Length: 458
Image (cartoon, rainbow, N blue to C red; front, top):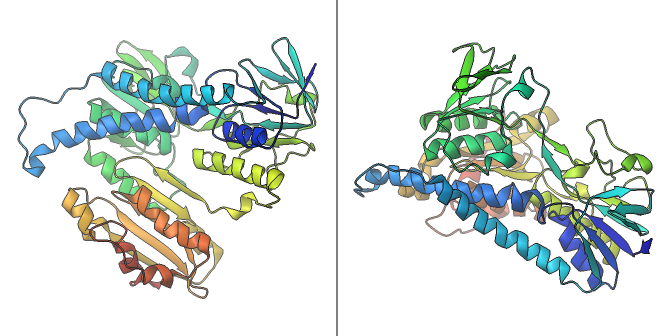
């Protein structure tokens, strides 16, 4: 048995940064990663997908060249091997950089093997038994594959395995109409695949407002993506040309035949092979580690950070988990999960940036509220770029003048939303932003204008 001051399990967004803080504070730590350094974001999430989204954007823009007065000859074709090589090169630099950083930390011993708990303070790693009074779990999550009829009889892809394709699917069927599925759907449509999205619910991205969902649907359909909603009876069967996906929709054919199928119906935490049953750590019904507002489990000395704790499913929430834990442990700064404002983006093109409450949540809260919207066709920057799809929306508390939430679906929406998010964190009234002088021509400059058009939410 080897004694350490702390053990960190998992090299996602929170783990390596926490290791850096702990060794700087003089701690002797063990760092355990069983597979790929960098976690989901680096290997199967943000970095590889955004690299491929960039390739798809270029292809889409080239096809629209005549809209900008640019004349090109010949058809646009995609070299998927080159797309994959570009993606792999970008993520490899990040992954290798994280591993090199960790292995070079003085006071940090890296183990590249599976970790399994033996007790509340002991972890087995290969032939080694490690012991520490502080253990930090940062094991992330993976694609959930539900036990749908026929799923085990057909080949299917997840967000991880789809990234390794070096051929272009003739027809990609995406099961799941939310963030991951829609990003891949538009990406591969722009590469040249026929794409069908199958969604069980009555609209896409169920967590967003209905007007946002409808606008996203219009954007995707305008690019030739077939959207099948109300798909209540999804089932799979082999077909001579690939896979048959049976659906039960209100309209359209009862089955879709695709050459490739992507399952994008959610995520599950990587907690099932950690030996947590040998500890007093509590899991919820979905396998997420139960933590308090400072990310402590019910076992003194064990924390859970990142996707495995169910407190967020994004790179930015995972990194913020690191900030919360390190602030409490090392800085005497009592930060909490409940301090943060919900914020995320959907990286279709144009992207959706979201902060705070949705319109539906505001209505359900009963708060007296004000609302303003503005179509992107009224945003000069969007029109000049030839990318004027989407709209902006903001909701304000009528009494306190505090911003409750906002959605920006449009070019630059993932960046412009931070104007609003920062005002919310500053706890400043919306009038602070309304009176700000923004630079022209930008997307952000229309936010103060939009705030000048606030009306009572009816």
